[in-house]
Image 1: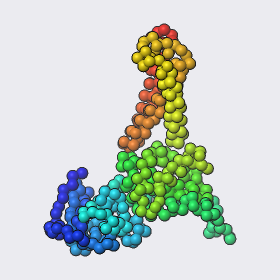
Image 2: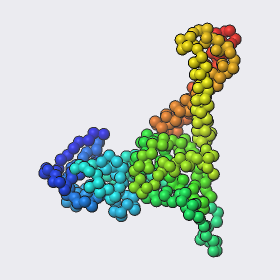
Image 3: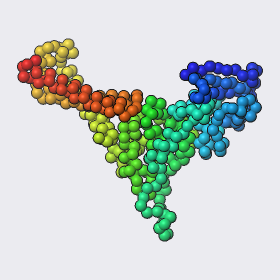
Image 4: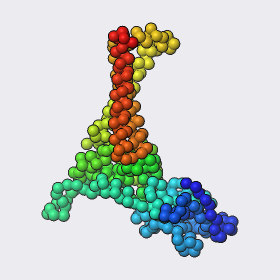
Length: 253
Length: 114
């Protein structure tokens, strides 16, 4: 896609040592044929995040910049975007840690763009829902008297990191298979499938393995590992996928 | 067929092919390279049934592995129900055609019709 730089009045001055040039991708699929970049000079402090810089632009320069955000503390998973070429959470990325005078923000790859930095999450939520991300068993803690589904620390250890997923979509954005295979389940959903398959309280292993055992399922992962590199919560989807394959090849039970 | 079964076959054929191709290369090393490709040597190899049988097995293993690999690449390249069916059936047909052609060569040499 052609990238046509547009220099605004705000960018006319040279950045001071405590200011960066923020390049924001602007694209409205209803009107634009290609993505364009707008540049803004934004002052920053040591603790200023990329999200705060974008909100500064919205507040003082151009309120029409579309960005999704909510919690500002890496919990809601709303503000995923490509920052200087890498998928990151804008609220969790400090400008000072980027070591660059120019910060470029673009919408996440492998997601349809709604406008500017906001992308559609339907596919991610569909695949997440598809792997049945909940405990499957006949009995329940709620209706059975005095019954708890006890778990040892070792059993918890098997899946606990995967329960940290905030569904931000950065792993799907970084995945090279997602870029070419529009039907691929994706690392986020596969990691969640492992999270529940490995849970000792869950009885839906066979159902879940059957769901991901299709032509665009788990076997299409090339183990590039980029999903694990970009996860802001320390989840390792690539490892989860390999462990799931272990179940399917009969190495694990 | 479930994808996990296909992939088990895929991995199995790869491992078996590595082992048999290694044997094949070791046998070829017993002769000089140019001598190995001489017409008489090639015919003699095909007429030695245990070796011809191993070549046939290598052909089958590599055809299955190769065409499944091609199927996977093509499925990742483009999606769509009709396209995916065409790719899957096309790869199976090409695999059968290649195995048939290779088998025909071995049979023709052994029956003296080649």
